[in-house]
Structure formats: C-alpha cells, structure tokens
Length: 231
Image (cartoon, rainbow, N blue to C red; front, side):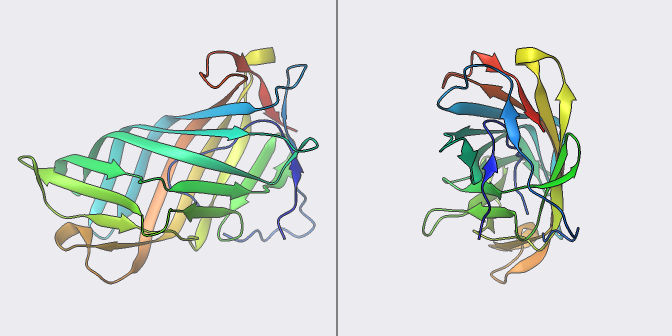
C-alpha cells in the first residue's frame, strides 16, 4: 500500500525513472512549501541542470532540453504520489545528428519517497518509480537521416529494475527555495524496429542519468514562484 506523505510541492523528473529501498527503519518524508497560505494546487516545473543521457546497446540518446511538469492538489494536507509529464527537444540518438522523442502521453509516477537525512530523500526502483502510458502507447525515440526515419525505439510502460532518484534542498530563500534531483536508473526495458534501435525482443540493459532543478509555483502559468523544501 502506498503511504501518504504530507507535501505541497516538488517532484523530480527527469525524464525516464525507477528500485527497492533497502534501508531498514526508513521513513517517508514531508515535502512542503514555504508560503502562507498554501495554494489549493501547487504547480511544479523541472528543468535539466546537467545533460540527461539514455544509454543502451545501440548507443546514447541526448537532448539539449529535458523538462517536466507536474501539479499536486493536497487532500487533507497529504499527497500520495506525484506524476511528471516530460518533454524532450534538441535530441540526438545513436550517432545521428537528429532524433525525435515522443512521449505520447506517458508519464513518470513517483510514490512516497524515503528519508535519507535532513533535506534529502530518495526514490528507488522498482517500488517508488514507474513509467505509465496510455493504452497501446509508449515513449518513442526515432533517429532520422536526411529527414527520413532510420528506426524507432520504444520504451513501454514499466517499472525499471534498479537505480534511484535522489532529491536535495538546493538553496535560495523564501519564495526562491527549490530542489535538485539526480537520476541514476538502470534496467530500463525497451524494444526496437531494427538497426541501432534494437529489435522486436524486449531488452533490459538501458540506463538513464541526469540532474534536474525543480521549482514550485502557485499558478498554472508558472509565473508566481513559491518556495518548496524537503523537511
């Protein structure tokens, strides 16, 4: 059963995400916002701070801009999970100068994190990080050459097998307080249409890594920033 955690802000990417927590006696940690009154809905944006890289047997996928967005509506001051909607632009894949990454409505779901120490939490695979997709959809990575598709790699709905996302209070004060998260996820499953993309078989050797900064806002336009911290 997913435990509720008190929170009104934050999430962390990132783009692809996923493990099982091994620490005994670990506890859930609140995610809080620093403004009063607390908005009915908190809107969150994650922007890459260091390059995000998706690596598998065919090579690497890199994008110049990796972002995600999320919103959280507290129920009695508690949120049990956070869903991130990613976007990737300016991408290359498997040695080709141009690639397109379509998420097709797929999202990353992060359930209750585990406290590591004051101001730091961890999401681990496979219990706390999941890729969810609409029926029949998947994340598609398509490198192109001279405007034509070379092949397509599919990252389907799944719970990867190992790795984690570590989030930390980043700095600032008051409404500028934000959070960073570092993604190191392994055992991501994928299939492909041939060539560098793989084949029709399911492979589980992909890895994803990168760093993101998450900021919280009180409005859907993401213009009024509010502070968010890990307790």
